[in-house]
Length: 227
Image 1 (cartoon, helix red, strand yellow):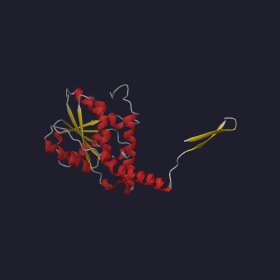
Image 2 (image 1 turned 90 degrees about the horizontal axis):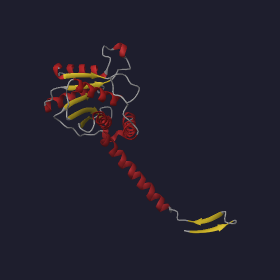
Image 3 (image 1 turned 45 degrees about the vertical axis):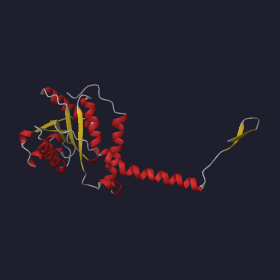
Protein backbone atom coordinates (compact mmCIF):
# COMPACT_ATOMS: atom_id res chain seq x y z
CA UNK A 1 0.00 0.00 0.00
CA UNK A 2 1.41 3.39 -1.05
CA UNK A 3 0.87 6.55 0.92
CA UNK A 4 1.97 10.16 0.30
CA UNK A 5 2.01 12.96 2.84
CA UNK A 6 0.62 16.31 1.73
CA UNK A 7 -0.39 19.65 3.23
CA UNK A 8 2.58 19.95 5.57
CA UNK A 9 2.19 16.37 6.79
CA UNK A 10 -1.36 16.82 8.07
CA UNK A 11 -2.99 14.70 5.37
CA UNK A 12 -1.93 11.59 3.53
CA UNK A 13 -3.02 10.02 0.27
CA UNK A 14 -3.39 6.26 0.40
CA UNK A 15 -3.79 3.70 -2.37
CA UNK A 16 -5.41 0.46 -1.29
CA UNK A 17 -6.99 -2.62 -2.80
CA UNK A 18 -10.76 -2.69 -3.34
CA UNK A 19 -12.91 -5.61 -4.48
CA UNK A 20 -14.05 -5.81 -8.06
CA UNK A 21 -17.63 -6.58 -8.97
CA UNK A 22 -16.62 -10.25 -9.08
CA UNK A 23 -15.19 -9.96 -5.57
CA UNK A 24 -18.33 -8.22 -4.33
CA UNK A 25 -20.49 -10.90 -5.90
CA UNK A 26 -18.43 -13.63 -4.25
CA UNK A 27 -18.70 -11.94 -0.84
CA UNK A 28 -22.48 -11.55 -1.18
CA UNK A 29 -22.77 -15.17 -2.30
CA UNK A 30 -20.69 -16.37 0.66
CA UNK A 31 -22.76 -14.32 3.10
CA UNK A 32 -25.99 -15.70 1.65
CA UNK A 33 -24.67 -19.27 1.93
CA UNK A 34 -23.74 -18.69 5.59
CA UNK A 35 -27.18 -17.20 6.23
CA UNK A 36 -28.92 -20.20 4.68
CA UNK A 37 -26.73 -22.60 6.66
CA UNK A 38 -27.47 -20.73 9.90
CA UNK A 39 -31.21 -20.78 9.15
CA UNK A 40 -31.14 -24.56 8.77
CA UNK A 41 -28.98 -25.22 11.82
CA UNK A 42 -30.30 -22.79 14.43
CA UNK A 43 -33.58 -24.58 15.12
CA UNK A 44 -32.08 -28.07 15.62
CA UNK A 45 -29.49 -26.44 17.89
CA UNK A 46 -32.15 -24.82 20.07
CA UNK A 47 -34.54 -27.80 19.98
CA UNK A 48 -31.93 -30.02 21.62
CA UNK A 49 -32.42 -33.78 21.79
CA UNK A 50 -30.13 -35.15 24.48
CA UNK A 51 -32.15 -37.26 26.96
CA UNK A 52 -30.68 -39.00 30.01
CA UNK A 53 -33.25 -41.66 30.98
CA UNK A 54 -33.20 -43.31 34.38
CA UNK A 55 -33.21 -40.32 36.68
CA UNK A 56 -35.91 -37.81 37.54
CA UNK A 57 -38.43 -36.94 34.81
CA UNK A 58 -39.54 -33.29 34.62
CA UNK A 59 -42.10 -31.72 32.31
CA UNK A 60 -42.66 -27.99 31.96
CA UNK A 61 -46.31 -27.45 32.80
CA UNK A 62 -46.91 -24.70 30.25
CA UNK A 63 -46.48 -27.17 27.38
CA UNK A 64 -49.34 -28.08 25.06
CA UNK A 65 -51.25 -31.33 25.39
CA UNK A 66 -49.05 -33.05 22.83
CA UNK A 67 -46.03 -32.28 25.01
CA UNK A 68 -47.81 -33.92 27.95
CA UNK A 69 -48.53 -36.96 25.79
CA UNK A 70 -44.82 -37.15 24.91
CA UNK A 71 -43.96 -36.96 28.62
CA UNK A 72 -46.34 -39.85 29.36
CA UNK A 73 -44.74 -41.90 26.57
CA UNK A 74 -41.28 -41.20 28.00
CA UNK A 75 -42.50 -42.04 31.52
CA UNK A 76 -43.84 -45.43 30.40
CA UNK A 77 -40.89 -46.16 28.13
CA UNK A 78 -38.21 -45.76 30.79
CA UNK A 79 -40.19 -46.63 33.95
CA UNK A 80 -39.74 -43.53 36.08
CA UNK A 81 -41.22 -43.47 39.57
CA UNK A 82 -42.70 -39.99 39.20
CA UNK A 83 -43.00 -37.12 36.78
CA UNK A 84 -42.44 -33.68 38.30
CA UNK A 85 -44.38 -30.83 36.73
CA UNK A 86 -42.86 -27.35 37.02
CA UNK A 87 -44.30 -23.92 36.31
CA UNK A 88 -45.13 -20.59 37.84
CA UNK A 89 -48.26 -18.51 38.23
CA UNK A 90 -50.74 -18.37 35.34
CA UNK A 91 -50.96 -14.67 34.58
CA UNK A 92 -53.68 -14.72 31.92
CA UNK A 93 -57.22 -15.93 32.47
CA UNK A 94 -56.49 -17.10 36.02
CA UNK A 95 -59.92 -15.94 37.36
CA UNK A 96 -61.56 -18.30 34.87
CA UNK A 97 -59.41 -21.28 35.83
CA UNK A 98 -59.34 -23.34 39.03
CA UNK A 99 -55.60 -23.87 38.55
CA UNK A 100 -53.40 -20.98 39.57
CA UNK A 101 -50.02 -22.28 38.33
CA UNK A 102 -48.79 -24.05 35.21
CA UNK A 103 -47.46 -26.82 37.44
CA UNK A 104 -51.00 -27.59 38.67
CA UNK A 105 -52.51 -27.23 35.21
CA UNK A 106 -49.88 -29.50 33.66
CA UNK A 107 -50.32 -32.10 36.40
CA UNK A 108 -54.08 -32.21 35.86
CA UNK A 109 -53.59 -32.50 32.10
CA UNK A 110 -51.29 -35.51 32.60
CA UNK A 111 -53.94 -37.15 34.79
CA UNK A 112 -56.72 -36.47 32.26
CA UNK A 113 -54.53 -37.98 29.53
CA UNK A 114 -54.30 -41.22 31.50
CA UNK A 115 -51.22 -41.04 33.73
CA UNK A 116 -51.73 -42.44 37.23
CA UNK A 117 -52.19 -39.58 39.66
CA UNK A 118 -49.84 -41.27 42.15
CA UNK A 119 -47.04 -40.80 39.63
CA UNK A 120 -47.61 -37.04 39.23
CA UNK A 121 -46.03 -34.41 41.44
CA UNK A 122 -46.67 -30.72 40.69
CA UNK A 123 -44.05 -28.31 42.02
CA UNK A 124 -45.47 -24.78 41.65
CA UNK A 125 -43.08 -21.84 41.57
CA UNK A 126 -43.74 -18.35 42.86
CA UNK A 127 -44.44 -15.43 40.53
CA UNK A 128 -41.34 -13.61 39.32
CA UNK A 129 -40.91 -10.79 36.85
CA UNK A 130 -38.18 -12.57 34.88
CA UNK A 131 -36.07 -15.76 34.82
CA UNK A 132 -39.15 -17.95 35.25
CA UNK A 133 -37.51 -21.11 33.95
CA UNK A 134 -34.62 -20.73 36.37
CA UNK A 135 -37.05 -20.05 39.24
CA UNK A 136 -39.00 -23.21 38.36
CA UNK A 137 -35.76 -25.21 38.35
CA UNK A 138 -34.57 -23.76 41.66
CA UNK A 139 -37.99 -24.44 43.22
CA UNK A 140 -37.81 -28.06 42.09
CA UNK A 141 -34.30 -28.40 43.51
CA UNK A 142 -35.51 -27.11 46.87
CA UNK A 143 -38.53 -29.47 46.84
CA UNK A 144 -36.30 -32.47 46.15
CA UNK A 145 -33.90 -31.46 48.90
CA UNK A 146 -36.75 -31.03 51.40
CA UNK A 147 -37.96 -34.53 50.55
CA UNK A 148 -34.45 -35.96 50.90
CA UNK A 149 -34.05 -36.75 47.22
CA UNK A 150 -30.67 -36.26 45.57
CA UNK A 151 -30.96 -37.35 41.93
CA UNK A 152 -27.82 -37.67 39.84
CA UNK A 153 -29.74 -37.41 36.57
CA UNK A 154 -32.67 -35.25 35.53
CA UNK A 155 -34.53 -35.51 32.23
CA UNK A 156 -36.58 -32.52 31.03
CA UNK A 157 -39.45 -32.69 28.54
CA UNK A 158 -39.71 -29.28 26.86
CA UNK A 159 -41.15 -27.91 23.64
CA UNK A 160 -39.30 -26.91 20.45
CA UNK A 161 -36.55 -24.29 20.61
CA UNK A 162 -37.13 -23.65 24.32
CA UNK A 163 -35.41 -26.95 25.13
CA UNK A 164 -31.75 -25.90 25.09
CA UNK A 165 -32.40 -22.88 27.29
CA UNK A 166 -34.36 -25.02 29.74
CA UNK A 167 -31.47 -27.45 30.04
CA UNK A 168 -28.98 -24.63 30.52
CA UNK A 169 -31.01 -22.97 33.29
CA UNK A 170 -31.77 -26.26 35.06
CA UNK A 171 -28.04 -26.99 34.96
CA UNK A 172 -27.32 -23.61 36.52
CA UNK A 173 -29.88 -24.31 39.24
CA UNK A 174 -28.84 -27.88 40.04
CA UNK A 175 -25.10 -27.52 39.57
CA UNK A 176 -22.50 -29.67 37.89
CA UNK A 177 -23.09 -32.72 40.11
CA UNK A 178 -26.45 -33.43 38.42
CA UNK A 179 -26.52 -34.50 34.79
CA UNK A 180 -29.30 -32.68 32.93
CA UNK A 181 -30.85 -34.16 29.80
CA UNK A 182 -33.59 -32.76 27.59
CA UNK A 183 -36.17 -33.92 25.06
CA UNK A 184 -37.57 -31.31 22.69
CA UNK A 185 -41.10 -32.16 21.62
CA UNK A 186 -41.53 -30.74 18.08
CA UNK A 187 -43.76 -27.67 17.73
CA UNK A 188 -47.04 -28.23 15.90
CA UNK A 189 -47.68 -24.57 15.08
CA UNK A 190 -45.09 -24.58 12.29
CA UNK A 191 -42.71 -26.82 10.35
CA UNK A 192 -39.43 -26.91 12.34
CA UNK A 193 -37.44 -27.71 9.19
CA UNK A 194 -38.73 -24.52 7.53
CA UNK A 195 -39.40 -22.30 10.55
CA UNK A 196 -38.71 -19.08 8.59
CA UNK A 197 -41.79 -19.66 6.41
CA UNK A 198 -44.27 -18.80 9.16
CA UNK A 199 -44.61 -15.96 11.63
CA UNK A 200 -45.00 -18.45 14.48
CA UNK A 201 -41.74 -20.13 13.55
CA UNK A 202 -39.87 -16.85 13.24
CA UNK A 203 -41.18 -15.57 16.57
CA UNK A 204 -40.39 -18.80 18.42
CA UNK A 205 -36.93 -19.33 16.94
CA UNK A 206 -35.60 -15.78 17.00
CA UNK A 207 -36.94 -15.02 20.47
CA UNK A 208 -35.49 -18.25 21.86
CA UNK A 209 -32.14 -17.59 20.18
CA UNK A 210 -31.96 -14.19 21.87
CA UNK A 211 -33.15 -15.61 25.18
CA UNK A 212 -30.57 -18.40 25.02
CA UNK A 213 -27.85 -15.83 24.36
CA UNK A 214 -29.01 -13.90 27.41
CA UNK A 215 -29.07 -17.05 29.57
CA UNK A 216 -25.62 -18.10 28.36
CA UNK A 217 -23.81 -14.76 28.42
CA UNK A 218 -25.63 -12.36 30.76
CA UNK A 219 -27.78 -14.27 33.27
CA UNK A 220 -26.47 -14.47 36.84
CA UNK A 221 -27.93 -16.70 39.53
CA UNK A 222 -29.94 -14.75 42.12
CA UNK A 223 -28.34 -14.23 45.49
CA UNK A 224 -30.97 -16.41 47.18
CA UNK A 225 -33.05 -19.31 45.91
CA UNK A 226 -36.87 -19.40 46.13
CA UNK A 227 -38.25 -19.91 49.60
